[in-house]
Length: 79
Image 1 (cartoon, one colour):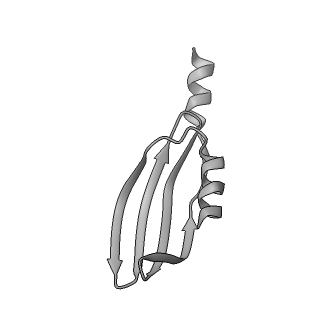
Image 2 (spheres, helix red, strand yellow):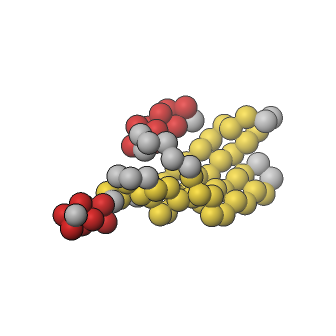
């Protein structure tokens, strides 16, 4: 889990706030959908899943698509 957190932090260096769009849990399994946006990148389809046993995360998956902020480039060109 720490490795996944480090990889994600490296791709989102501004560390802006995440928007959590859906949270669900059933027994030991949790699902979290999220979005992220800063001045250079955005994620619209973030999804994490977790398996928790004895209060600890024992398995995790993460999926997201990192997009460059193309609207930033068009705004810069227009200035």
